[in-house]
Image (cartoon, rainbow, N blue to C red; front, side):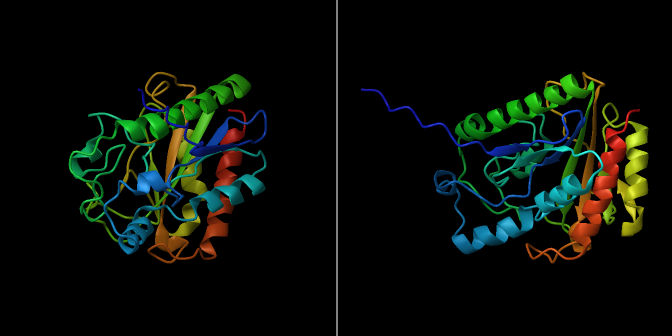
Amino acid sequence: MTDAPRPAAAPSYALLPGDPGSPVLLHVPHSARDIPPDVRAGIVLGDEELARELDHITDAHTAALADVAARTATVTPWRFVNLLSRLVVDPERFPDEREEMRAVGMGAVYTRTTHRAELRPEGFDERSLLERYFTPYAQAMTDAVDARLAAAGRAVIIDVHSYPTETLPYELHGTGPRPPICLGTDPFHTPPALLDAARKVFAPFGGIGTDSPFAGTYVPLAHYGRDPRVAALMIEIRRDVYMAEPGGPAGPGLDALGAALAVLVGEAAAPG
């Protein structure tokens, strides 16, 4: 007797189309709170504890911010949006020992919370979640970048994140500056012109830093460090700029940030 095959997981992401010739892909990986019931069963937190953890770990309203940008940009970008909480899998982590956040239980599959409490039991086998969610997401994102390369000859990934005003215990690099806008860069994939454009459009928000408290960019592993046609920049917005913390409603800053992001999208889409 053999086990019945596991039904395929519903897609954990949405690819929202933009202008056919646009090279720009807005990536929104951490905006959702949804956790499938069978995944929830493997999390040891009670419902109230889990709700508090989601308040801390979710980049709330960043999908709405990207939507504002997409609706108002001169050239509509494509959007790749994670539909599930990063507590299912975090698609932006390395899935192996290269990931430094494994040191605090926050690799591609989290076993610890933002406050370093137990999230999943010791010895939890992450392989099923990686197979069901991480790998299909990574392949779909790779395909989306390949499609922009085929259509436009280049791809520009703008990663949309937010971060808390106060340092949380899980942060490995939380002692540095926490400016209203943090721009994450990569020496191979972040061209100076894209970084300069971001500094200009986000200047009105009270201060811009680079790679603190969060550094780097997201590029699919198939392109990472290999394909100079793929440009990337991470936008990290301090949450007090646009919302009530933790996990509260958005304020007027969201529309202003969306408008600024739309300008950056337009500049990134313009022929170089």
